[in-house]
Image (cartoon, rainbow, N blue to C red; front, top):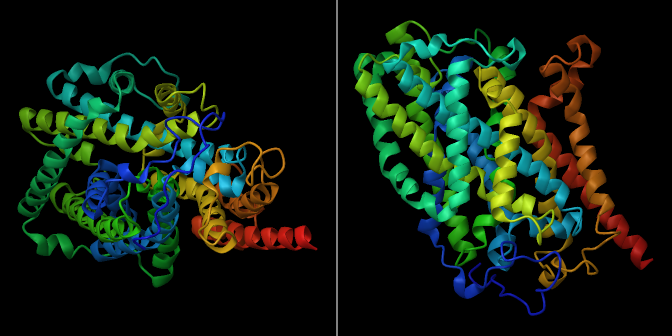
Length: 494
């Protein structure tokens, strides 16, 4: 794998498809080693949504080991497309939007890029809501009247005035960081890397102490009365776990393009992703299980839990730390990639900052406070729903790169309107059809889940496919694309 690294070819500048942000990285500038990728995943995994991911499984009925095993399996599964899609980034130094041009066409690549970007906008909104709500909880401790401000939003918005104010303020802070540029976030990332693990361990020790030791906490039984009930919850939960990193499994070339070697990106990801997610999730599982012993109810949201602490100073410190670490995560994980995706729409006109502002606005319009209002919505509506869009894209890109092109790309033509990847007017119709074929089977289940149509109006087996949305889309689209492209080759050379 060490030799599978290709430098920049000559003659790719000057095209409307080329920009400084989307250009390949020269081999001499690819400096990320195994530790860098391990550190990336450790940092990405240590976030509030990871904690909520684990605690939502406990609130949904699993016991501690069922939740941990589900998370571990899900991350091992998503590691496969992560490493496979990362191969092209490491070999050719290209980002995700450019890599997608090989399978979808130089213009068609905008479709998967925008689908992925919209999901990232949702994550940006969720993280911004978490940071804003942390500030609200801190202020409410000192100014209780904040909770009783006059209601200014209609009921259907589902947003109280106090949290809305702090949410908008935190959103503006995120946009200000985008304005200043990515370099401004480095110190915050360092703060997060040191503080969040310490804070997580402190919360773990508190849970063990207040819950009378690990024994009573880990002895909390599963709420499922039969194995049928468990499996009915397990498979959609597993799909949700895979969906958690489905965005990164596509745009991982945005990071692996800096790899010194294939070994660096493979080993770094394989070591850190499942391990760090499982360890941090364990903390979420223990603390959530402990809340039932301590408070008599399961509190799955760590912000709500911290708000229960009696010390005003402790609550304030905790919430300020959450807000700062969330800001760092948000910019690094949820601004960089969608900004590149939006820039790919018009490389010569949309800058990184403009792409960041677009991400911020869409993050508002997605109503993130509704997505994480309860664990059912978090897993079944948000994580599984977007996995049904991203699974098919992953299937198509992996099949194209490994089975159709045998890991060989013409980098110069990836930046050419009239090259190998122009297909018909810049769109590979076969990829678009395969994408649609992979998405459609999951639509009925999604509509019944959000109660847009009645459950009885759809065959149970058809709506049940939604529980396996990422897997269904990945397999169907990947297989369809393989058959279409082989047929295209036969017609071309007949």
